[in-house]
Length: 360
Image 1 (tube, rainbow, N blue to C red):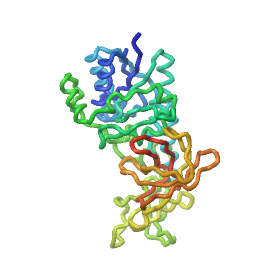
Image 2 (image 1 turned 180 degrees about the vertical axis):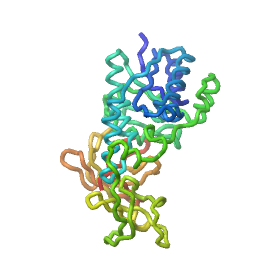
Image 3 (image 1 turned 90 degrees about the vertical axis):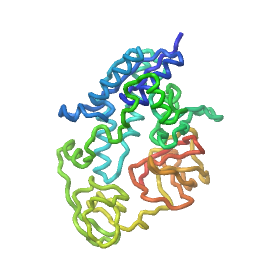
């Protein structure tokens, strides 16, 4: 009997080819687009880009018809609101910079989708992520970096559980992006040259602060730009407008390049400093999730990525809490703009060992 797999189809070329490859491999394939967010105005809803926009649904439906596989749209708006939007708003109000895609992957694209699909008789779910899955010698599943180095998405997948990985397929992890587009062209998929989505799906205009104000119906409170010593430099528009390392949009003329180096929600202050002030040799991570490793040990060395675009830096574990949920690390070389709220993901070579949320 064929194994059943549900493919999350975003209307893009990657998930389209993922569905094609799985069908070619002999799986019983069904396509699903997850309706996670619906903008209030129809113009925005129809825009190309968002993974659950009207355009995305139309494109996914056409590809499913072309591949001759069943296709559904599943409503996950309630789960998305609770686990992604509310989290995003809360973190920015606390002066942190969240990564909503990581939260969406763990709690919506996997936890909610997987539960629903398993209940419907599926053996696996699959996506068009550039990553691979391997069972390590210690018996644990781990996400492995993809062949497409520049497109690798393992950083955003660190929080997937062992049970989720056991029921997940990443069909395109062994391909480069150009190969995926070439294959899509060869089989005549209409999404072959569709541009990749770059923005957060629920904020297509990139106005994070405006979205937060509309979502909470609470206006931003202006406060002071200050030096680390507390000297006032000017007034800011509200802490949700800023993130660590930001240079543009500050509206400060100080005769030299300056950056946001800290955000103090308790006093509603945004701290300004030099690029040197952004360099750190250590950080603390909380809510640590383990993947390839069962737990970390003091003295353990590995590579840490502090943001999606970070190339990674060697680090050493200097403290692990008794329950393993909190880890301190020290970098071999200083890293720039360690940002509370962002994920730090730990690697052993190409394999994800685990990760957590930076708290300081």
